[in-house]
Image (cartoon, rainbow over all chains, first blue to last red; front, top):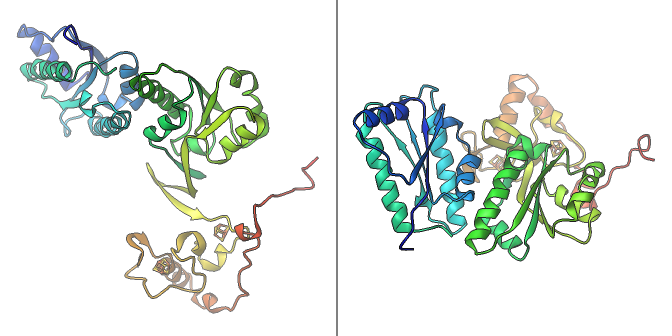
Length: 133
Length: 222
Ligand code: SF4
Ligand code: SF4
């Protein structure tokens, strides 16, 4: 438990979250090493199976960075994703796994600092929860 | 189509907890269309079983297959070579599927992975409603082409009960009173008089009251 280094999969969309990531980069703010990024065109493309597969393949936590609810380029991708994340939380709970291991965050395109801060918070949270299995 | 809903994953984990090689079998028929038992849901359930069992401290092998249909023996036969490698099956077809699999492969434990709900259709994306109760002698044309058996909470066939309230059923404000709709439609079509016609009582022999049903089409049967 002491040597526990969580693995966190972070999906992020090509729009707001991507801009936030670029700005973070320009500000020389870097994501914690525990967080592995996966880019998707829109968070609405992320299905329940993608989220579960991350856990099945060893992730201790999963987070999704997307746009604000009213600024999704594809109208309501982030809203669809939020419903799916709620569903996965329920499924995790039924399996005896903490639902907090998966979260979704709406970012503003210009807020690079938020992107990195939230990722760090997620690492802290998963660190406290420890490994799933 | 037949509408079903997924069983909670906790219930399925409890069913399969003593097995280590589990085959999840989907169906490309109704349950694919109502997003509960097609190839996508097979993958979701298989992944959930792997995660859930690992959480219980047990590694299991979970196979995935989706058949054309689970209500025709020729498709169930496709499992013959595959099923040997497993010690339990979870079928996510309607209740017919797991029974057809169990009849054909009597040595293996077969579990139902969904709760089969009713015969109906999608009234909007993600919302399904009941339309038919399979009574075996369809009479909806007497009722503005709306089924009072499936759609009236009391299956009343001679008019509304006293609980009909501004178009809603007394059982719940979520339920439309189908008799309100029947009367309005018959009025709109100028056929209200037809509802006054005395009809012989409905025979329920063609429904479940006649026992489990079977249909033989002589011109098709061997
Ligand atoms: S009358 Fe019978 S067959 Fe026709 S829709 Fe109603 S339950 Fe189904
Ligand atoms: S209120 Fe309408 S739908 Fe409800 S039981 Fe009475 S007649 Fe049937």
